[in-house]
Amino acid sequence: MWRVCVFAALLPLALAQDPKKDPNQIGARNVSKGVNWYSIQKEMALGRQLAQEVEKTHTVVTDKGVTEYVNRIGQNLALHSDAKIPVTIKVIEGDEPNAITLPGGYIYIQTGLIRTADTEAQLAAALAHEIAHVAARHGTRQATHSQVGQIATIPLIFLPLGGLCGIGANHVLLPAGLLAEQRAYEREADMLGLQYLYKTGYDPLGMVEIFERIFSLDDRKHGKASHVFSTHPDGDERLILVQKNIESQLAEQPQYVVTTSDFNKMEVRLSALAWEKKPEPVGPRPPTLHKSGEEAAATKKFVPQSAARASQIKEAYNIR
Ligand SMILES: [Zn+2]
Image (cartoon, rainbow, N blue to C red; front, side, top):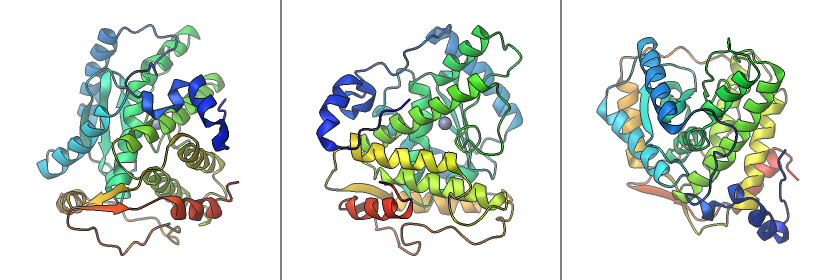
């Protein structure tokens, strides 16, 4: 399980013990260690084959204003990641806040996930999480384990952010051992993705914020209480771990990118697409930790420091 290093004094020791916890070692460490029967070539061939299946059953968005923007954000994150293979990012239609990551670096972001984000840092956080699955080769490692356990009937594991990743109600049924492994991979993708987000220059709190929005949407859809995570311990646990990882692994920077005018332009393009969004579930909107009416600056919007907002989050979620 995770050792969370709360006290700054322990930080150098923790980083020395585990390169995965040190963002300064991104690119120079191996984050995909573990039993894996798939060579890189075999993984990429499998990914190509599965990508064809995904594209047969989903509508791929072709609007350049949307796809080029999402690709630019994703490829920039990939440059600051541990991924050893090229990452292919496509946008697919769907109103769930989901993404599908296949072996071989194929990432499909649903329009519902893009719409759930209201800053570039939040969208980048979701992409960074998926890129972490690619870097750590979670898909083929889990496929290997399911074969070791002779559970050959289980379909190859897809890793959507708000589905299997969200540990929510829309789960594929997995045996207990694989489910535990799945959850461990999600926590690892949260941790590595957070580091990629940070190294690319984004506000790391974007990850806390996008999780808040995804999990609270999930709660509202399932008619749960509006109090954000009172009935959602798994989501709560993930969010708290992200906040603790921010404190224990990321040296605070003087400023971070929160959003850009390009994000706003992309949102306009996206809303113009002929995709009928289902009505939002009825219920009170969850609290958000930033001002919704804020307008993005002409180019990039920065926050000076995250300390004040971090303490706001810690208070909201009773993090000690
Ligand atoms: Zn995931």
